[in-house]
Amino acid sequence: MRNDPRVEAVVPDTVGSYSTFGALAYEEPLNKRFLYGDITTRFVDQIPFAAADHTVLDIGCGTGFVFDHTATRFAALGIRGIGVEPAPGMLDIARAKYQGNPRYTFAAGSFENLPVPDASVDRIVSTLALHWVKSVPVAAVEMRRVLRPQGAADLLMIARDDGARFKRAVVAAQRRHLSFAQIMATAGLVQRLTPKEVVAAFAPFAGGFTVEVRQFDEVVFGTFEQHMAWWLARSSPVIAAVADRAGFMADLRTELSRLGTETGIPFDTSYLWITVRSIGR
Ligand SMILES: C[S@@+](CC[C@H](N)C(=O)[O-])C[C@H]1O[C@@H](n2cnc3c(N)ncnc32)[C@H](O)[C@@H]1O
Image (cartoon, rainbow, N blue to C red; front, side, top):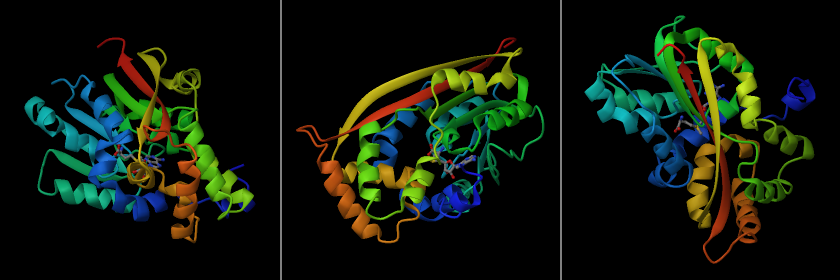
């Protein structure tokens, strides 16, 4: 569907919308602490960084969330960080934060086109970026190319059923602002894979590495404002084509309030932890 030029014409540009709208909202403290901010922090905390990880590559690094959170560990272990990010607006913020710090470098690039040499990276990390690629198998080939034979990778991505009820409310609000083709196109932007499909996509690692994919599901309740703080930052491509943003937000508030309980509006998170380990390490 994505190669059909009639559909391409209405597909919002994921990277472009992250660069402008998403980048502005991303550094908001509520985005960093609530729901996917909290899940990302918990994920990063369990990554077993070690002194053997001389070079860590963060793919889809955004504004530098992972490096912000691991700075003390990286300094203690002597780790060098490389952040790769396709959205210039996100990359600029990351670069500005780490300007003058020789431990970190940032480069424009993507899962499909990593600007690093073959077998040059000890550990790959990525948080909530892999589901935005057009093809996970293509991304896996590129990750395998840059990872050293003794390397490791830790990736967090959303799973197939992430935010199922929330998504239905978003679509109900979208119906008043976008055409059917536009809604279908935004839905098609995000990869929604099962653990089994991810393991199959990571076939290039077969032989030298083990690949483990674990799925986690948890319901997180919040107010409309709490949900919007993270959702607008992280899902900006989904509403990139909406002209009347204020009208859309009012309609979304109405739709989401229908889901409300005494504890708040629920979001059914569903995400995957992907762990790649060298058999020889
Ligand atoms: C939800 S943000 C996550 C950013 C950061 N990793 C974090 O956890 O804060 C998703 C990021 O993926 C990036 N992205 C989109 N398509 C990508 C691709 N094909 N390759 C790498 N990154 C991509 C976006 O530009 C955006 O910065």
